[in-house]
Structure formats: C-alpha cells, structure tokens
Image (cartoon, rainbow, N blue to C red; front, side, top):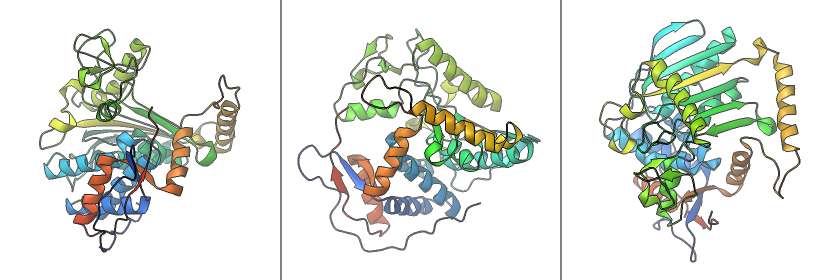
Length: 379
C-alpha cells in the first residue's frame, strides 16, 4: 500500500472567506495541496485512518482537477455527513467472502465507497498479475466517486481496467415514466501519459449532479436529458422526475441493465430501485455494489504490442479529419487538458464547494489562501 499523505500541520487562517471580484464570478480556484490537506483533516476528524483519508482526498482532488466537478470535491461534505450519520463506516473491515484464483467477492462493511473501490481495484490488479485477469465484485459499499478513479488505478499498474457501480434509481427505462435504474456509470482505462485512454460515462444522458447544477444556476437543461412525471421531455430542472437513458434510449437502458447485472445481481446485492438515495440513506450503509475487471496485457498479445497498438489507436483517432474547427478527441482528452490547467492555475470550484472547503479549513486551522474567483462561460 502507498504511504499515506501526512496530515497538514495547523496554520493561521485568513479572516475572509471566499469572495468574488466583479459581477458574474461564480467559480473559484484553489491549489490541489490545500484542497487535499483540508479533505484529509476533515475525514480524519470523522475517525477515518490516515491511509483511507489519503485515498479519499486524492480521489476527490484528482477528479476535480480533471474537471469532473459533480464527482470531485463537491462530494466531500456529503461523505462527511455519511460518516457522521453512520451511513459510512470510518473503520471498516473489508473482507474476502469468496475467492477462487482470479476472482473474489468482497464485503466492504459499509466503507466509504472510494475506499472499497480502491481496495477492490488493488485486489483485481494483484490477481491479474498472477492469472492474467482479475475480477473483483464488492458488496455492502457506498458511493465510490468517479468510476475513472478505479479504472485509472488499474491502468497505472500497467493493466487495462474496467470499473462499474450500481446506483439508486434515477433513470426511467426507455418509454417509461418513473425512475427505475441508476445512472450506473462505467469506466474503462488503459495506458498512461499522452496515450492514456479513459472512458468514464453514466448510462444516463447526464448524472443528476449536472441537472442540479443547471437548476442552481438558473439554466435550461439540454433536450433529451430528463423527463417529467408523465415521461415528457423537460428543460426546467424543477420539473424533472427522471433522467433519460443515454441515447438512443433503448441502448442506454440495456447498457444500464448490464451494469446492474454485473454489480448488484452478481454480488447478490440490492437492485437499483431497492437502494437508498444518498440524501435519504439510513445508518448501516447503502449496500451499493461494484465490479472491477483487470486485464494484464502480458498474458495476451504482450505488453510491448499492447502499448504500440494503444499508441496507434489513440494517435490515429486524434489525427482523424474533423468535421468542424475543433479536433477529434479520444476519451479522456478533455479531462487531461483540465488537469494540466488545474495544476497550473488551481482547481476550479463552484461557490458552494468553495465555501464548504473554506469553512472546513477554518475549523481545522489550515491556512487557506483567499480562494481566487474566475468567471466560467455559460454552457
């Protein structure tokens, strides 16, 4: 296991909270180290051990740096609330329930999902290194943040990684009216650096966080994102009763059901409509299930051949003639660009997340520089 990041020593705190400079400024910048230190201290106060604090803090910071705002630092207050309410176990005993060679079923003991997913990914890597493939299913877990956190953990180990999770019902089936399936995200990752491939997607058109963000900012939704209680498309976030499957809808529904099949069904865990939503979860955990698949290229075409073919796949795709002025991209390219910008300028935060982080910094005596405002273009 990697050496956990040390908790920052308390320092003096500025007297002013996050503030804007000029009209229209809605987002702020904070450097990654400051954000990571705040998260580590806040989680530690809830009884999470040093290694798990580092796992969760690194995951949230990495996700925010990559521009996946809905699954980054914005989740920290919710995770802290889960710990305070006994939904997430700060000191879980994650155990192997059943195993056979390349496979394992883990019980997460209501751990923070980021921690359970990380343990599962490490176990999948270990088994893939021995058998060529590692398949780990996790049950009795909680929200595991962005799926790409776990697929990329496997790809950084030189593997090809696939991560999926069950989720509470937010998505209506194709031609349906009521939410039945979760957003059921999946992520596939391989390679590193300039030739990294990272697909990270929900099986709904968008996640609920994007709908709520549009509503918070008074913006209309995109057509096809969501429906009202009668199954009709809506553009007003306040009228949303269900999210829509990724289109065409029948394909998105099928893909979402595949995720449920390989997570909840395989793990003998609650199905999507049997799970509590994050905001209504009860003590004892949400019983979410994860699926982690790891493949070692050395057991197939060979590692050198894999790296070469992946290079060709990524570079040929990027070089494809573009229909418009912007270039053809590979999965993960926008996130990589966002991460480089965040490393240079700081992580971009919405107002609510900035205020929450600043309050946590004050609570823990961390010197949080005035969060720098920046304007963000309206989608």
